[in-house]
Image 1: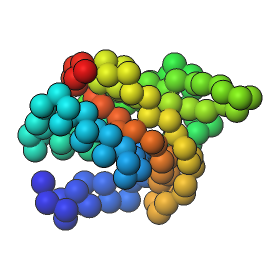
Image 2: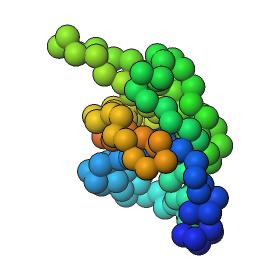
Image 3: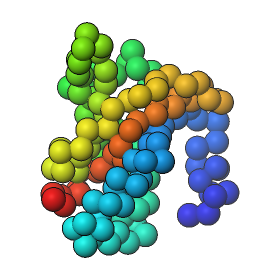
Image 4: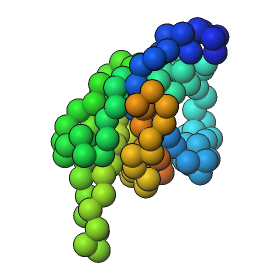
Length: 134
């Protein structure tokens, strides 16, 4: 799918994006290298689309143990945590659970165009079909 097709597909729709920080990709790359695992283009595309859901979903909308349907298929689960008196949210897929990786939302509710919202996460969200790599 070309960039123009992607733009047309979501034109005028609000989206929620869970955007990993740069070091999240480094961590995933290190894990894949350590386990001698290569991802094909289709799998990379599925991982990418597992970071997006239709509609505006703010941090107030994310419920502990709640599911969010992702555009690439499957759903991610919100987990709530608390450390040193601070509450935080984790958004993860089955692949994260299988590999003990918890993508913490480190910046929430960054408003974007078309009533879209971005949540920055510290790890890559891994879809349910990603099994244990460790």
